[in-house]
Image 1: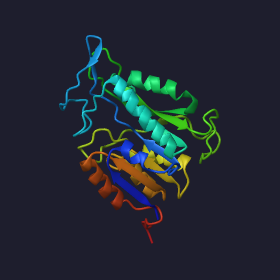
Image 2: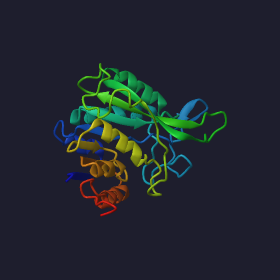
Image 3: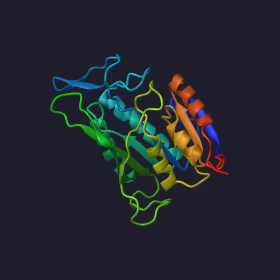
Image 4: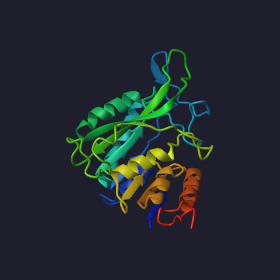
Length: 252
């Protein structure tokens, strides 16, 4: 049976208190800083109002570019302390792309692979002369052997898995959180790069999608979430999820 460890709190503060190498992989997606905008050639718009780009109910998601870069550096450092492998799902946007490009440069020696998540249907741009966005990326960091593209745990036969995954976003399981990745994405990472009994860490747990995927495939899960409402939703969703061994056959 899977061991589930859920904590309500600031992920940086919680991770600092945990011992090294508590997880086999980290699979997570940080806030995208979607509410930092550009006006007259400068970053601005640090408002805290609900608008079309707002993804969270109680989080402004509008750090300065420098603060966003520093925040992600701290998160990545802690993730790579707690696990040798980090799968970091991000999307390049106006409010984060400079910071993300800098991150790729800073952690180049740890960057093992870049997986493209093709969402199949492009999300329409909210401004004129802006390309529609159809993909996100998963930056794969390896603390021990990034120089090689070979994964220590790769549960797929040679030539059967590409680094471009076509997975539709699907319907949101809850309406109050606008940045939920599909369960299929979490399942694809966990099934291909971990084994039963391994531990998955998600420091931005949100409403618990990674935890559901981990538990359903007989993996242990450590989840951290800052927002109390999302944390309670995650608790409920994960508790209702059955592991593969608990599931009964449809026909007897």
